[in-house]
Amino acid sequence: MRQLLIILAILTTGKVFACGGAYQLRLFPIGMTDNKIILIETSFHRYSGPDTSNETTSVRDRWRGTIKLSSLDKKGIYKQIQLVDSLDFPDFNYISEFKKSFKKAIASAQSIHNFVKADKQVIEFCNYKKSCKFLSIKADTTKNQLRVTTLDRKNISINFPEEIINESEAIGGISNQHFSINSIRKIKIGDINLTVVDFATGEENNTDFITQTKNQEKCSSPIDCIYPEIVLHHGISFDKIIWE
Image (cartoon, rainbow, N blue to C red; front, top):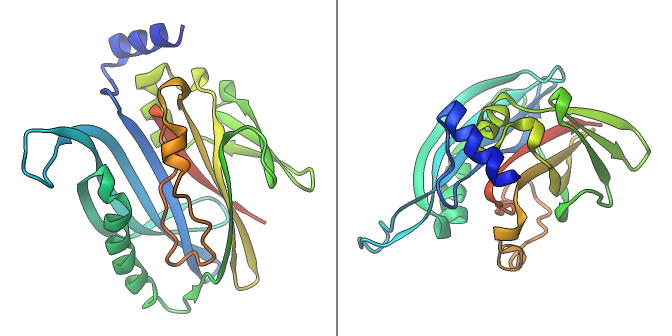
């Protein structure tokens, strides 16, 4: 049934995920200023492309996209501060490429007036589960929303970013997706506590979970903590920031 929906989506929208294709929209809060979160936003597509590292004709997984420095207020309004980089690199360079761009973004952020650096982080790797220690998830894709329940039984509605709705057209549409939780980050910036959740969907049966979870690191500093989330085959994922 899922394969049929993907074929129908291609015929009606003209969009398609190539073999191994995926999309990630990730958010990395690094500080605050004037009641706004300062964050690094990454928007990347995975695709199959040439192995430029060895200048051969081999094809391997690559990532292509942008890294931005942005702000986010409590109303959920994002504003771009700076386009930090536009990148295209092989999958095995994911962390090293991100580290170089993050270093530039952090240097720019530290020049912002009244910037307060994020100073503490705890990560729970759920690795594509519906229920984790910090919260659980219940989908309501018919309303373009997810619902999560926190440890203190607070129910929160999560709207899908426009980018995720658009990307889902190539894999059957948003109403046919089954999102789970990849990771949960608890971040402290001064007196402000944030929860950042990575939601993901895709083809589980074609995803190598063992390899992707082998080298996960639980970072304590949000400033220099970069790690790859699980990427599902023909998958899409996004981060959502919850103010506490």
